[in-house]
Length: 307
Image 1 (spheres, rainbow, N blue to C red):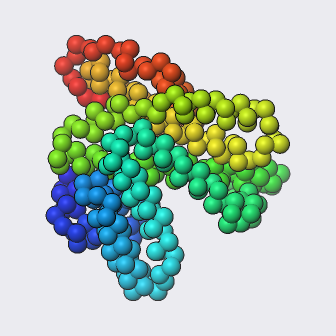
Image 2 (cartoon, rainbow, N blue to C red):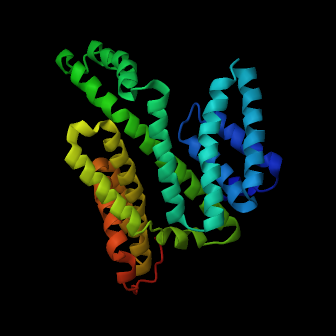
């Protein structure tokens, strides 16, 4: 990772090359999108919004030319890279100015709301759009014997109802993780240990907690009459509190000077029981906004500072 970050910071053309190649490679290996976006984050955090915008422009042009030569198309790839890079560029600028991961995460939430709204403005009813898109996929599962024909309609309806929220949550998590990665690279090169301390202190605050309670209350009161969009907003808020919950766990482990085994256990549980563990972490993050758990934990005596 240090080698890649060092290469990116050698100059403008090196950064554009890294962002472009990684973006095109991500078409085959989707997780690589995080590395491509992190390049934009690193340049923006270190050199400012103007340099970050120039990098996005150069990299977009490079991707357009490469995709034209290799695939014979331009617009789909250009749209993909702009959706990948622009949010990270914007949040990188917010973090550079504010120096607050908590505030930056809240701006990311606003972008997530834009993603939800965009799905309604583009097609009118995103659930109907997803229902139409998912029907052939579920039908193939029935034909392959993986799914019973009697379950087809119910599964399509359930998946279609959840997908707009899943898209918004995925957008928020991907954007924030890429930003975290870029910030970590920056600390790795110029301020060792800086990101660790910053992430351990990530906290969104009580006003958003009150807003979350209001939204959850409105969702419970309105029920099905409130429409799907309230559920999508709930999902988005939970994902943000999930990130704060992770920061709380890292902060407590770091403050108590516990070993890396504690964090390995948390991530193992997250992988094995994703929905339940993610909910637990979201509750921890939400609770922390009221009682500030990290401030109540005293330092440990273990010399191992991993966390």
